Image (cartoon, rainbow, N blue to C red; front, side, top):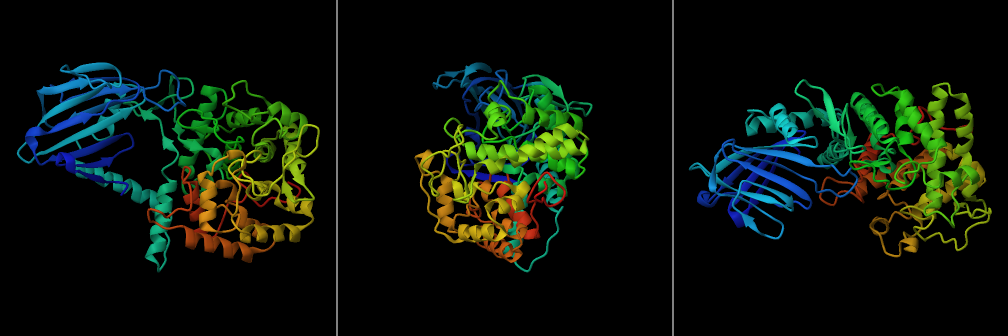
Amino acid sequence: MPDYFRISLRRYRASLELSPTERCASIRLKFTQREEARMLAVPFAGESLVTIDPAARRLSGYTRANSEGVPENFAMYFVMDFDCDFDVQACGTFTGDGAIVIQLSGTGERVGAFIGLCLPESGEAGLTVGTSFISIEQAAANLRQEIGGKSFEAVRAEAAETWEDTLSRVQVEDRSERKLRTFYTCLYRTCLFPRMWHEFTEDGQKVHYSPYNGQIEKGPMYCDNGFWDTFRTSYPLFSLLFPSRLGEILQSYVNAYQEGGWLPKWCSPGERSSMPGTLIDAVLADAYAKGIEGFDVELAYEGLRKHALQASKDPRFGRKGFEAYEQYGYLPGEVYHESVSSTLDYAYGDFCVAQVAKGLGRKEDYELLIGRAGNYTRLLDPELGFMRARKADGSWLEAFDLLKWGGAYCEGGPWQSSWAVQHDMLGLAEQMGGREVLLARMKELMTVPPEFKTGGYEIEIHEMSEMAAVDFGQFAISNQPSFHLPYIFAVIGSPSETQYWVRKTAEELFSAEMDGLPGDEDNGSLSAWYIFASLGMYPFCPGVSAKCSRSM
């Protein structure tokens, strides 16, 4: 349950219960053999500090352990306050090599601490944990603000109320309890991301440690989000259910632009530069089209325009191969990895930026970018009816294979990647020879065997395995490029096919069980797909307030 976690530690004859707040937790421990009760803080991977304060019944410290995506001065700070005394003779620190030091403070690589607890007859003890990315003092402040003197039961009740309010934004009825459980489980999963990164001062002001410049900055910050995944379903869903919160989230990305010089592409917590494209373009354009308030549209557009019209000297940001894209209208396949997927994402990104430019009255920008939104046509092979890599000299890259994944395509092959033209699907149909041609191709896609070749990956990645396992043809619902494929039928005039495939996918491949998803969750985007499928709608082209036509 999102408000409560319990685990039995049989080896130590102990149990642990936990209830969370945004940045803190209330924990209840129970030991069967209270005379040997110990609380162990494990060593961290990087530089760490631990301090034991018996008088205050507190363990505090920090660790710089991380998996990149942060400045060098990054640290996670913590305080742990206990409700029982410490046995000072049973307290100390240790290092990663196992050396034990009977002292109350330690610093260095992989430092940890152990604490002897003086338990009452019941063998129970409570502790509260506060965390911060700003300082130990801020961790203590977070603990005071979020838990203070509240009991474990009160903290749990507040956590349950928070999730009840969140999940009750959608009220659905169904005779099937299984479907209801699946729906609300998927809504819960969707709402786990992005994560709130900012904290509050004592007077209630939002502040954050910036994962972009390493400074303490004012305002909101959210992280742990890959826009290549979430622009398709998660953010359009947030715009319907949580418009005010979405405005704050988007302002945090504008803050990231101010702090790092570029809008984020994949923030975890800082820029990871994973996956093709700059798909925050679609997120911001979609919010603008829907009138979402709470973020600086002018600054957001400045960042969007930078994506579309400027090369980045920092390879983490912007569009790779920008100069080549500007010169050729596509990324040459003999030079750039994932050239087809990147080109299609750039064309769609240009379309999205163009929509904001139009709304803001930037006519010159609009006309340039709406023209570039048609660059997808440069990679469509009219004889094959699929997108394929083209060389700088205009010729096709050799060795085209419908079943090969990777190379010019990201986490897919021609079957999965050729339809990333959400902004001009009718135009794509026209380029292919008409709607009937595209309709026939989509029917073929859903029914051919789910075969694949590892291609540029050289190994079988899990997305390949998942596509084969569900056996829905080349429709790889386990991965984001396929999310909109069954809805193409409706766009080109065959809604009954959309109804059939969406219902079949939702009913057969999703549940609330441990194996209830057909693939990667990816920041809640797959669960958000199910939510839209259940509600009978889908955001086919994020970035506009209506369906797109050939005129774009």
